[in-house]
Length: 161
Image 1: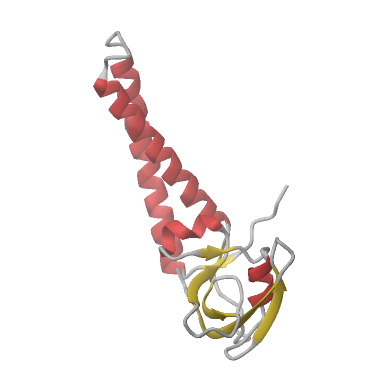
Image 2: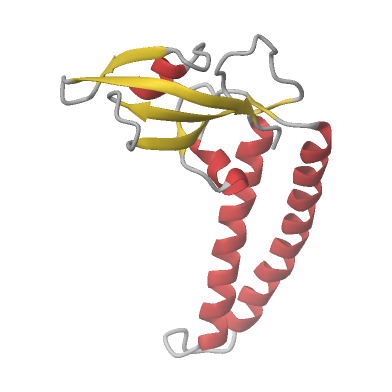
């Protein structure tokens, strides 16, 4: 069993997530009833209304799972030591190449739906390398293929989702 990594959230964001979760759960009850209603119409292979309702129910289930994951990994306040931590949006340059730059959130993949940027797990080699780093720090980490990669932290900030 894996333990979820906490991600900083503001109290306002937590309230918004909880409100959306409640709304999606209510909507799911309605969508479930709609699926049952269309199921009684007969031939399911040719029942477009049933398939649309089922797709809506699947979509709601995915969003509800994302919201539960986001809420279960939420902390109210980030730590304030000024270094990269879970919840940081980090911009890095790879292998001393100023043109090979990327920005990502350090956190669990479930957070992607909330921030809309790439997410790097703090348990991954890159995530471990940048954790605790500050602007200007250069870290080396081992890639899964055994090669080493150097990463320089260009900027970072805590994103209260």
